[in-house]
Image (cartoon, rainbow, N blue to C red; front, side, top):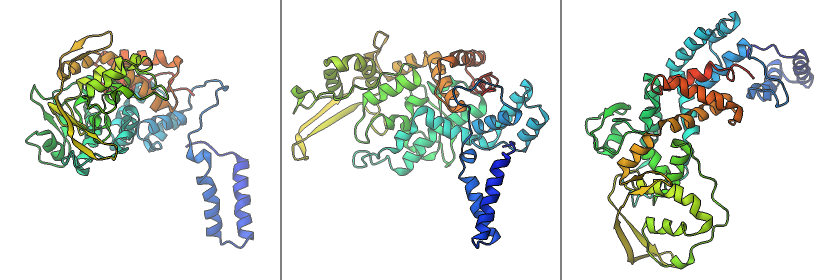
Length: 407
């Protein structure tokens, strides 16, 4: 990392090496033991940051190269970055901007893309459970992998072409492969690689809300959860996260034994004082996404079959209903269907840009966002806004900031 190790540390390593030789180890074995101490050292495993009581200071040239490289490659700086750091050129704004572009253009930027998108959108939930194949036979393991890949590959396309962040809210195209094209009912895609495919005007796909991988997370593999979906939209797209659910929420006993629609069941929760404030905010968004089933396929009907006390299906208590996606944002506009909901969410691109910027700052600096970061986030949005929220402009705004160049 371009930092000369402390002399005492080297002396301790040499003492260990000598002790192993005296104990009868051959030189190679003694050296292996010594190097294992180096590789297990926190100084090797972690990028050390100052404690809270230390004063902030500008990064050294080598530290700046390291921060930039780990941000955009998740790897140590290469020879070009090290040489620019050694010459003192890297700190020049035009050089730093050019190197940011170079790192983003390099295939190694996949390290940033995969780690950031996973952390930002909370994609770990995709692997929390499997779909019930008896209910959704088309959503096999290959489709699940392809659906998860669509999320990463769409962001990769935006990054590669410096496209607008708005396209993640609503777009007239998808980035899919043959497997997902077949699942979505889109013709003309033959390869296993992901490619941009134009959509007809009436397609529910295009943007995060139409992705099977995102929709799959809003359920349990058997049934959809408007609450999960609505809360995810509030957190990730609208920059308006709901508070955590209260502990020990009692069951609504008066509903026991009744076969209810999803909407009826959730509206009942809104009658409970400890549930009402959050559910009135979360549930309407989830209702607007109910035309997508638990595996992300479009539907117009849903059904529910009760399970008796012995855990057996009771076919006499099956209820089927036509999905009603209409609702209204709490203290906000109403919508009649999913498409209107998507338009409302897409109109809030500035809120989405703030959510994205905050996640980017946390990822790049490796710490939670603080109130002192608000001016930085505002500046990032302002810079990107001049170019229609182009993805790379957010990154350039962050890398050129004082916060990124100090520790």
